[in-house]
Image 1 (cartoon, rainbow, N blue to C red):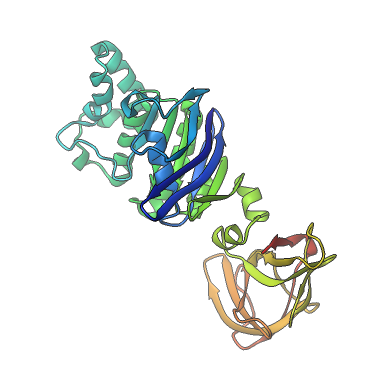
Image 2: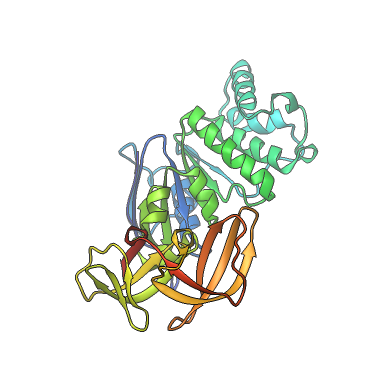
Length: 341
């Protein structure tokens, strides 16, 4: 539905976007994920019409989106701050865009009623924003964005202002609403958990470039670049050279992994903490530095000779090992992913 091809944007000496190309499908929940300053919000502003790229094209349903004025695009942007009118009721806030389009009063009331019911605020139509909780204000902003039935809804860090419990609830709510209304959602976030729980596919950005586009599970289990391996979730990264059975590492020996790289290629081996086992038949041996319990999961840091940073192991429940204990670490070859350096 949305085709972004070779989009670049510079601000003086700073390149915010560099030859970004993406395809976003009809009805998809698509996330732009990356650290602050990686270019994801600049791309969102280009789609909304608040920025123009220096190079590249953007088409929506085959039509040039960049030639349309911001207010003419079938695109709506939900701001991070929600930007609600404090002097208007919930219903008036939601109706504002429809009134600007001069729709008939009966049609406006019908559509506002429908969308408020959808977001669970039909009983609060007469309240002002200051009488609502943060989660309820977020729903009003969402209702106002979808009542105009845009082809594409852009969300800029939509849940960052909410506390952890409300954020978890709203993640489920956003996903349910997106399925129900059938609008294509593009969300910008630096929160990996948010992107992984919401999106059908994720584009990971770094320094203005797309590093990888994949479904959440594939992105987590098969990172293709060192940046993605280090940014998406916790990872243990070992340096060395690819070999037929994994990675040959100076000082650590041969570490098991699945490789499609030519032998001798400089590479990283990525092993997720939950894939590591503490057992007697170890690939590596070391001493426990620290044990932390996180309600259902224990994190064990192990210092291994020949490696500058501890290896992180995640085990289910409370663990019996203690700081100072000697341990052996092992993992299956299929759990080690080789990435070219």
